[in-house]
Amino acid sequence: MRRICPAPSLQTAIPGPAFLVDYVIVHDFALRLRRSRTSLRKVDAAPHTADDHARQYAAFLLVQAREELIRVDTKASIMLAAVGVALGVVLGDLVSRSWSPFRLPLGAALAWWVGVATISVGIVLLLAAVYPRHRRQIASSAGSHQVYVGYYADVAAYRSTAEVVTAIRRSAEHDLELMAEQLLQVSRIADHKYRLLGLGVWLLVAGVACAASALLINAA
Image (cartoon, rainbow, N blue to C red; front, side):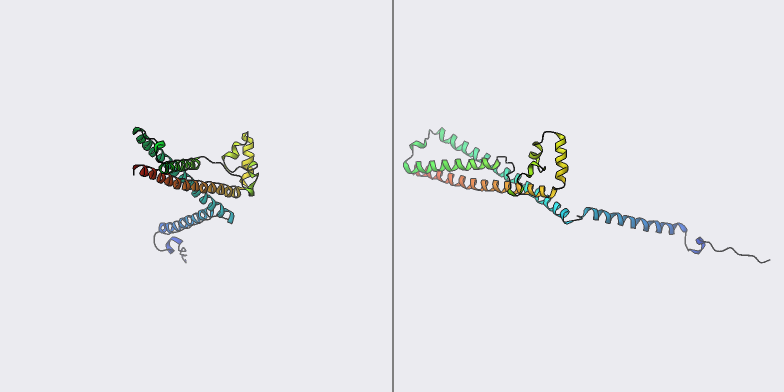
């Protein structure tokens, strides 16, 4: 009687242990799955439209503008503190010597009072630089702050939470425009503060020079 041999199985056809083949297949599938997830994350993180890229760049510029605003306020505050200490030391020394500017000759008195006035104006400019400022009305967005929420003062204008929620939902559709307006406002405020700070410093230098000249003229 003719014997029929069984067909070779898959395991006997593939050389080597079967678990090595399974491991290679599973490992390759896991690598492909990980790469696909990484690519999806990169796609999700990247801006999909030009407006998304503009929002990211506007947010970056807004952070820089706010940092400049903090920096100029810090500089003006340090200058005010230094001027206050210096004036206190000088005036205390002059009072202890029973010195009076009214005893100065005409030329020295003129230089002294010009220096005092110049220093006073410089201090006023430094105070104006550190004075808190709110947004200034922009012609291109006149009246928009009454409809949309762009910063804290817009929120403070509403009287109820429901109104704020409605305004936020309405403003979310115009977030790029509102961000650009806030960037313009903060940049203008920082630029104005820098101008006041620079002018105040130069006036302080000029005032100190005039006052020192008066003292030198009086001592000569």
